[in-house]
Length: 276
Ligand SMILES: N[C@@H](CCC[C@H](N)C(=O)O)C(=O)O
View 1 (cartoon, rainbow, N blue to C red):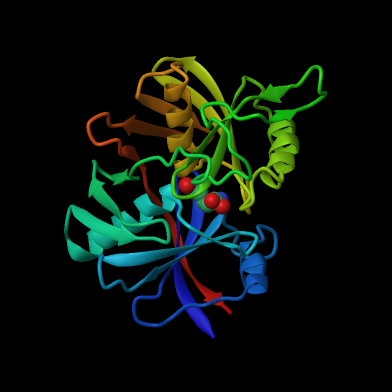
View 2: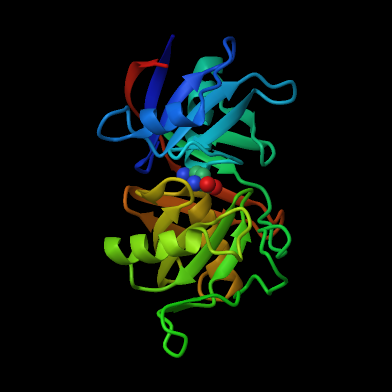
């Protein structure tokens, strides 16, 4: 069987997007892993299906490159929002996800703002395995008496994130410590691991080790989580530019609504056909 797809990216975080509005698309985990392989398959961080919805313009289903189905993806919401707005000739669409509905609006040429809703800050919502203050949880990486990383913030943006405040951001360090923390028993559902370097009160340099996808050029929910975590610690304002490997995302944690708004780019790379 074959399915057409669009390859897209949001600030470098890349997706294969399949239109499943009329014909269901339900690949198995092994198929997703094979498709996601960057040497032998199409290669992507996430596989995305646009499905019908009774309550929104569409439902967005997300699988990580390791085949796991997850709640949401911030960068893919911008990409899918852009595709739907182009198709409907509109400037606003609502996309449902397993984490809840999100509104996407045009913010310029190939730029989209998505309303990621309220951050979920209670330890049960992240979720953590035990009660902790999510402003700075009891977790450290490295020797007990001289930890390299410690007291990260924990945030759910519909999916679980932990954010370390550090200027150690090289590939080896992010990969080594990110993969260790991703499956730490404190996170019963696994976790996306952010490494945030606060440059000034309006700029954060962020790298993310994604649950189920590894080192990525950008993680939209990770950028939202980083802003929330740094603002809660008084390190940044509630609005900042998050500089990721593939570009910049503007994150605004609106004080009036408590919603996190993310604005950033959308790019179409190519079209193709999947054989599954
Ligand atoms: N790249 C995404 C997040 C994708 C899902 C994540 N790896 C998870 O397992 O929760 C984003 O832009 O938010």
